[in-house]
Image (cartoon, rainbow, N blue to C red; front, side, top):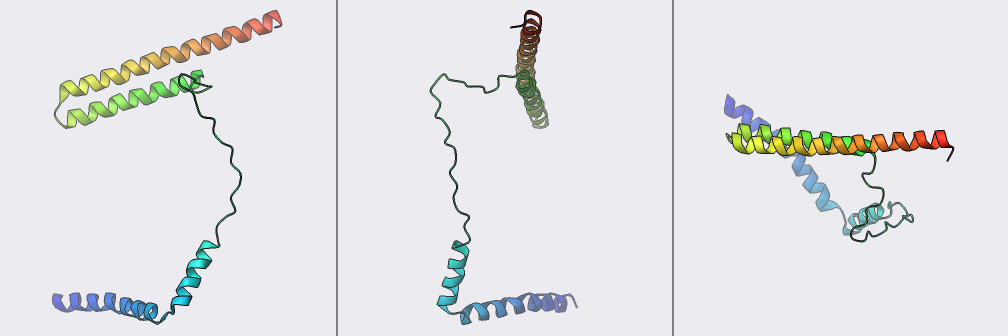
Amino acid sequence: MRKFFVLLLLAVMAVPEMFAVAQSGNASPNATQNDNQAGRSMNVPRRRRRRRRRRVRGERRHSNRSATSAYRNAGRDAAGGATGFGRNVARGKPVVAGRQLGRGMGRAGANVGRGTARAGKRVGRTTRRVLTGQ
């Protein structure tokens, strides 16, 4: 009984494939070529894009300069350390796991300090500007 159902299933799957092969065999080469051309003509017209300025070595222009981005990087570093910790514990390497966790948390702490410094500087500058009228 099981063999019968397997053969029936194979027959049902093979029938549509036979019709598809028969249709593609009947199609003329010109029809296929026209289909391809229709696909190519659907392209969206190209727009002018702004070119990115090539950075010279040592130039960092407005990238990762805010307190928000420093705090964001801190979270990413902490998450990366925790991920490495979990992976290495699962693989049975506790020493490597601890090292990964320590690196991640160390980088996170550095970034939190950076973000706090930037936030403090911004508050100080704004306060000075308001009070002195500069």
